[in-house]
Image: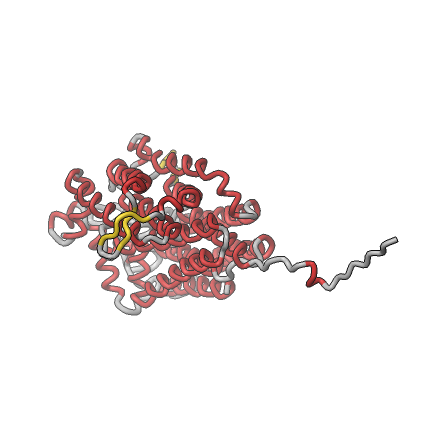
Length: 457
């Protein structure tokens, strides 16, 4: 399966070269060879440290990662060597402001991500050891997720968006929220293992649903307040939704109470609507979502969303082919709107295939949650799987106008290091958890066929 994923990546890379220049790209063997060596090293690590891990997780992640590298290469080639497109708008501003070394950097980020994958498998032999540091991970997660809001806008704000989600020091940029989500997933799993019996108690029954007791609403109210604070202070709807959704999902897995899902969903929707009325930068996201084609919005706010929708529409069912479209007309096509870039060149069929790959990763993670016996591992596997699925839903729903647009990345596909590295850590944790769940129990001594003779004197 891993070799099949590498072949697909190589074929996609070659297709970009033929679409742009009518020949194989010059860096085909270099980039694909380096990518193959990196993911094969990950495979050897799995065989050494987690031999019973789910066999689909690594090939699926490698396929998405490789296609992300291919799209990075495709976007930086826009407007050069015969591609009949312009890589700039009427103002002369670059829509895809990446250097010609972006593909090389993406391969480097892949190597770092796989290095973290190897480190997690080598260092964490039993997932339950993470439970000992539940509140430490909670403190780290809160600190990382709040850090951009505490820093000056010159360091933390994304130019042209107003969202404070990064830390920029010179040419180095990182997004702490990507690693904060991992720490908070561990914290939520450890916290709810200890508190699930109390939170599972039922109070009043309304319309056939057992509501929780009023005294047990404290944790979800705290998380709700923090998510709204993120929405207001950092103008980051995506992270706010994932933060709230992750806690509610793990809470549901821990208690099996549907009422927690309904309460969490209603609380976030009501809070977001109220915040949109009180704060203009939040209301702007809703206005863009509801009225993207008004002249004022297109000129000032919704140009990016409209160009992404046009790209999806022009792709049709089968797409224009890799290298034959013009995804570079959409601002941030390499990160927030990479899904529309794939939609323009691979069409609806290609997008459905990508969503199927994400769905398979989440399904294998959920299967692991069902198989593993340790309560903490069960909650962690379920939380990580849901977090990945929710992140894909939030960004895909935003660029297709299903929900208000958010500024989060598409796991594995978006250009950049923080998202890619954190996504590989998620796969490593799921691999470790699945290895624990699928590992056969040791055979009893009686099954070994050994007989002990005792002589009494």
